Image: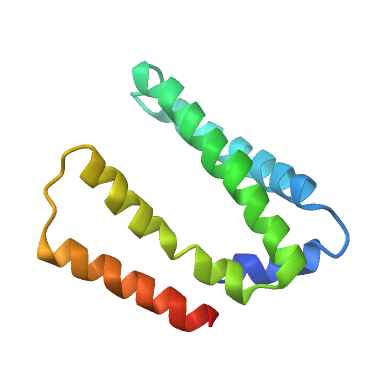
Length: 120
């Protein structure tokens, strides 16, 4: 499913702008997930504010910029660039004190190499 989304969105971006595409997609998903969230026993709490912030950054800003890049330069480079997410998460976890291991260093190197080969 995830792989099909940029291709479908590329077609949509011919007729609407990236902000509208992000808003419509988010609105539909919010309606669907709201039904599921109401059934959850853990609906409120300290995590709510963090979820709103994380969703605002990830969906509100990140997805809109992703759609913009797809509309401007096509599908392949923006999709490949999303591979940087694990690398950013690794750096953030190291900054928070998670131990640096050979395995994570090698994983970061492979991600970087793969992105470099795909873009160049």
